Amino acid sequence: MSDARPLLSLRGVSKSFGASRAVLRRVDFDLAAGEYVAVMGESGVGKSTLLNLIAGLDRPDEGTIAFDGVELAAMGDDALARLRRRRMGFVFQAFHVLPYLTVAQNVGLPLLLNGVPGAQAASQVAAMLRAVGLDGRAQSLPRELSGGETQRVAIARALVHGPRLVLADEPTGNLDRETAAQVLALLRERVKGEGSAGILVTHSAAAARAADRICVLGEGGLRPA
Image (cartoon, rainbow, N blue to C red; front, side):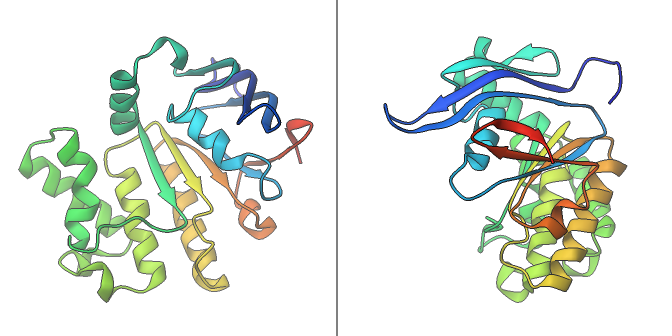
């Protein structure tokens, strides 16, 4: 870890759902710019909840979350939405590509939402599709793609606007082993190459090995593997 201020810092973060469902307990975690970290743990320990808190989609019951020096608790819902749209990228197990949009249109969605001019957006989309090996698929619809190609679309969409932080929630759970390995290598390559930071939530030890370090989430909090 660098001596510089972490890009992301969690201190004493706890989250419960109802009086009897404490999901996260006193989680401490730092993530440096340029770092790619895997978070593992059994089902139900709160991995997706942790990502939701980091993204500002939910708020902790206790503790603080600071992203790039800004405390998320101090931000209103509209400001958090702008933060997610401009400075975060998301990759999900279920892909979440829009079936009625072409590959290029799906990848360009973050640029459209951020008001990037058309010519500049088209150039960024084309460059990102080349980077993920989909430049020949720009006008294809999702139904015409393989699972691996669809997940590459999701990765391209997560990275096209140059986010500071990429959050990947079980991004290879629906893929075969060989395709999953290719997608994970691509995700790591692009996150590191773009100078972003990334958090990969996964059940897979093989997937976690692609990370710079591995943390395990459980009843004792978040600890190094």
